[in-house]
Length: 468
Image (spheres, rainbow, N blue to C red):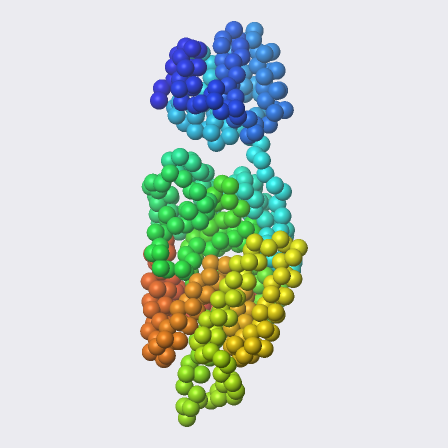
């Protein structure tokens, strides 16, 4: 849209596009600069009031100066970013993004001034990615602060953050971060093309909405496809390795591309420990994933075939069966574990731990005293739930829980055949999960097999050897 020439036309066009008189936070003020009518347009709450007052004062002093208005700003106004915009629609979008716009009658452009001061909180320690050592300045909801936290750790002149607006209504800022000489250019081009072609009204749920529209994953597939982190040092490490990072404004997290299945088993704590300790921790974590997935279904198979001559684990069989079947007991315990986990999310923090522990103890003791459950069922179900909490990625942990439920139900109804069929279906879902990187599948480095890469996934090498 072109710029109007007269002051009255400028006022009319702005009031046609924006609800100036209805919305209290849209500030539209008329001033005089160099004997010309001018207008300031901005959103209250996004602008640094002190800087705005200084701008007004300097503009009033410039009334007798016969200079181009842009030169007046560059000469007298202490703003880090002043751009001249000739597209009226882009000026309006900039104002809605928090910038201030300056219109002057007779000018075919507007000055867009960045004097934003976003409502924000101070960086604090992540509640999800906790570490015993290391930095405590995790991401916040302001994208500019998040990119600054990464640049503080990487001072490479080739590191770039490209800004893309996504959403016809929300016009959400999405920063695409990469290091130019390390990134896969084809993958970068594909990501930028997908971002610019997204056709949705808004990224309502931040990075989660962006993830869903980028991949288009099937509803029945619970596997995560993007690694999500709240820690700047994790983002910095992945950028140095050649990954691409997506940051969404208003979201205190970053998406890392590409991400394969084994990436979700890594945790930043591994690198704050000695290499041997980090390696042992990784193997314990991998064993916990398999245990959380398979322990309870295998226990149910053991109970279903107790008299097999090849049964080497007969000592694990329960001495008493209880008032209901083992299958019903497992479903009962798993259901109440889910309920306890959900209830802890809505319990005040200061009583959360006590509520969960007391609730589980009371339920378990009463169920055993009533003869409803046997201790073996509680032992295996709770052990599986504890192992599930060892998984560092919450989405992967949820996927393991869903797959465990599928195996439990299939094994309970159809015994060994149900177990094998359900397990095969789960493997097919995992193997067919799509990623943005066409060269590396979701199961890389297992499929296609890459022994050197697999060693780095399994073993926490010393930093010097890893960089080499």
